[in-house]
Image: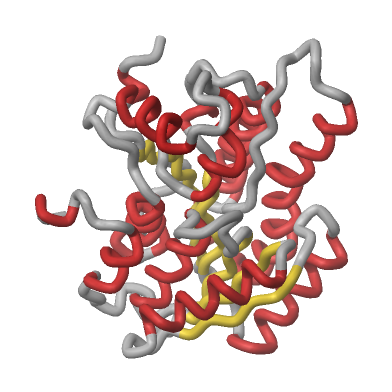
Length: 289
């Protein structure tokens, strides 16, 4: 990325991206495609970049309005690139809804080549304070969802002898970041275990599985889920400034940074890459014990 791109927002970077057809003709199933607030979340940016590279993207989200908004934005930045987008409301903790969404994707676009498990929530909590029902809910959304999509998509990938699974984890899976959210640490660590299991079980079957571990990112999730974790208590600008100051590069990453990592892992450029935990964090994990 050129130096003058560093200060640009994800939408500008997506619009200025020069496609090379790395995913031309492929079908990508992306969970959590909608953003929780204005701007570009990881799922929305991943889907948009895939579409710019020629993929047919089928996205799901529990919020139908957010899914439709994302799809419209994706079409706007990828109209000339051969990519397509369709979305469907889906509670990815419910197996019948997951199976129905996958069937709808196949009916619309054909066999699925790429699975991106991006859905996730953040709940501030400590071990002795979290309610057991909240623990189960976070695990259902952050981990069970990925199990369910893999369960229904991997057999087809195995039969075809090709496929790529990209799971969105977090540096919270491998480091304590100072934010009190025990369920996030636990679920993102579980996502790595799931990724390794898929990678090794399917390594000889033409199917790859890798994880992307974002660091401190400037996405709508920051504003929606983390503001109260800092002393800023509702001051979004203060929150972002605090997080940026923690990063060795002096700034947070964004959804485009996550999307480019996911593009690499989904493409043939990563044909010999499986079971990898790709950290996208501007170096911050090197500061943590």
